[in-house]
Amino acid sequence: MASPRVFCNAESQSGVYHVVSRGVDRQFRFGDAEKEAFVGIMKAFARFHQVEILTFCVMGNHFHLLVRVPERPAGFDLSFEAVMGLWEKAVGGAWLKGVKRQFEIFDLNGSGEAGREAWRQQMLERMFSLSTFMKSLKQRFTAWFNRRNGRVGTLWEGRYKSVVVQDEECALRTMGT
Image (spheres, rainbow, N blue to C red):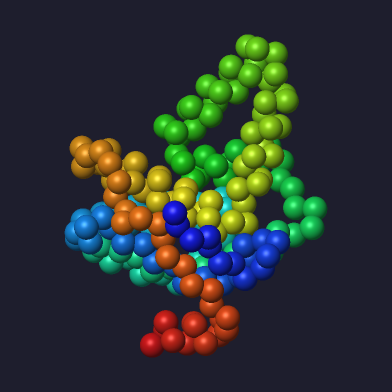
């Protein structure tokens, strides 16, 4: 069983982290098109999850991210439309069809508004979390990569690795040289 993640704060995942994830078998699979797609997906999911990408490096078989996960503001809330807009930018139109189909099912069974609100609350809970950001990013990129290359299965070598960065300024100076 994997050991539990270590986060800066006991009540949240806020903090600055250096994150690394390697491709399975450390094979060099990521060319320019793959790197460009990864960066686009990463930025869209960072916006959705309210995570700030400080700097990053995508290489042929792995990536490094320096991210800041802010503390969830007291009373943080977004309208259904705002959450849906962020989600659409993160997953794209094709994936959004499934969500809209679920809303149609809610309408058919009489739980339309309650179902939409439950979905909105679930999406809000995913924000300000390194774990859900990384899960979403790696899953979405894997789906894109596998569909594009006619393959199935895992693309990543296990869980991502993360290290808490105590001094953000020092980390930025080190990564900038």
